[in-house]
Length: 131
Image (cartoon, rainbow, N blue to C red; front, top):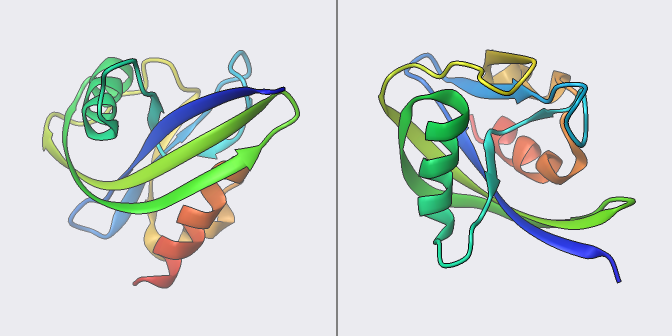
């Protein structure tokens, strides 16, 4: 049986209707795919708490988590990923890439042009439709 991983992602939108996207580096799993930033939920954490912690660790800024956008399970070659995606707002600092190859604020209508990891696609489609 494949390993199961439960992760969370943040759809952080700024006042210009741009969404914060992060490019996974060549040394990461799912290398060179774009994603909504986030990470694994630790034991005893709520998805919201995990998201706040991961964004602080990986991007050195603080977010406030809002409503859930999508809950997707995707089977990759090595692992089964359950990704819960939440809307979020920056409340302190500006995100800086500490682990990712690149970060970018992308206009909502252009978000589908990026090469997102498969588990992120349902959320990408949902937010690009909801102008």
